[in-house]
Image (cartoon, rainbow, N blue to C red):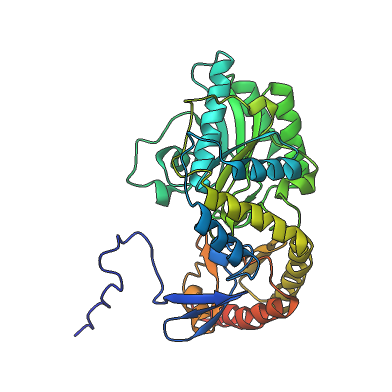
Length: 400
């Protein structure tokens, strides 16, 4: 007789996530504890969200102070903290204007609207946007259509039209689109694909796309929702290529756990006016304070340099311990955004890692993803290697 299924831990919450049987209660730095008192090293960072880790001693009092002042106000009125955060984002990006929202999905939706509006302003009635194989931009109908994962699209057709898909790092494919599709108005890509398996756009490819966009009058829109805000060792991953986009959606790490989304644009993409777009919660004082304090603390504590240095140590440790292991396809990424691709689906490693006291993610079925807080220390990076690599070796040694 088969054992009954384990009853749902949260029977009244819609079943949209394949959750592990772990419930967290609190965290400190790069460590979290569950309801049973078990301790975990956080190699996931809330999926690249907890930039400053947990309960950061500078962030917590700032947010407490803001909650005591003003949490939310309407965008009918000026929000001075919006200008503070926008000014800082423009300074570190080289762009000029910011729209605030609450999530990466919203930021990407805004980018798509900006591209279409720019096309209509040029007299293009049915504008098209170039998107990429293995892309992930969100789960709304429009961002789902820009995404390239049939599993998450299934059951939600008809999808939104107006997208042209090409492979990543293939400039010739993009040049063919330029020759054949006169209605293209923008190119939209993740500088490093996150959900698609930690796939970086090569620097020379980004430079070529920038040149082609300039030549064709297209907007270059770089989704830095997951790879931006210091994760690779620079403020934004595209800065390694020495280019500046026209549109840049941000979210995840911008508020260190407080929901914040933003679209940062340059002059060519400053096309939205009153009534064209909006967000009830976007730019609320609490979210803006979280963003302002996050960026301030990142500078004070040298977290870009830390991400580059500790990320390099983490990657080197993974490469050393997994060298020559049959079934390890590639270790890739930059800074504290790393992926270990295996030759088979490896979702079981989520539970095994949790059982061993480590939080990770598996994306694109076969890629172990590490996106820990940017405060990760060299010792903690070594602990990730010491916990994870034996799990991977044992998993790959199992009979298929």
